[in-house]
Image 1 (cartoon, rainbow, N blue to C red):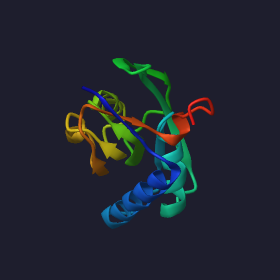
Image 2: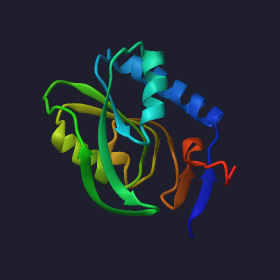
Image 3: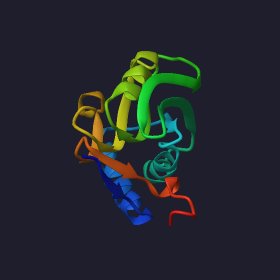
Image 4: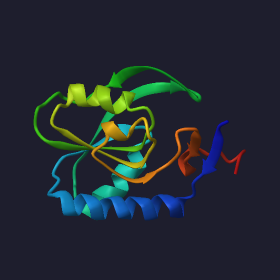
Length: 146
């Protein structure tokens, strides 16, 4: 049975700040790549915490509503072997991050939340959530649902 956990903006700010502390301890970051769409807001917040001026994006799609399918790169950045920090809001099964790591082999992957199946694919995360929990992020909530 799937449970739904609705996150608010305060939750996101707290978890993002915790991730920034972890990432500061892990090293210096000069290249930040947001996985769009879910990683855009965490990347913006982390860029402020980590004093990174340049944010790039990689547009990956693997979900149609709540069903995960094939990973598709809709728009990508220039391929490079240079180290970079890739940010997404959640690693679920790891399919998306695994595909990105093939494209960016020296990337360090970070997410706010990780599910058990996705944990092997992420280098840093703040909070583990059960695999059957569906996270509803504040930027996904329409005014009709609020």
